[in-house]
Image (cartoon, rainbow, N blue to C red; front, side):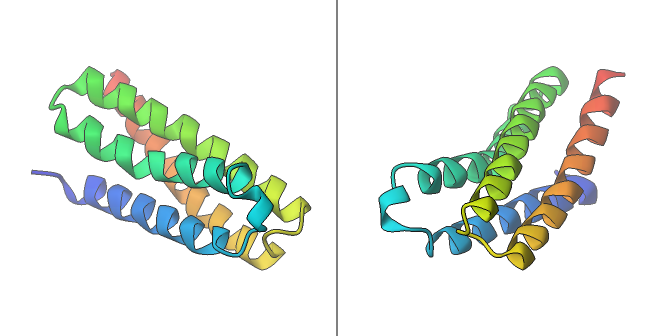
Length: 117
């Protein structure tokens, strides 16, 4: 069974992915197969890799999936900045998403480091 920290991490990553999906609904139609798709895929990759890694039931495999989730998170955070500069996302929404992303980032990084011990 997952511990409360892992459950919190999964739930926060899920909230992040849903928030990204919500904000990208307002992106320009000509970006549907560009940044909209890429931002959605990278944000959804975060909770998917957390869940899949945990399901593998191996410390090293779990760490590997968390590292992939961490990379996907960093990709999505860059795309949020990019989207704000293109005026697809307001500064307020960008800061809100980045705040959630930063919490996830810290939780992922801490867990990855503990799993290396």
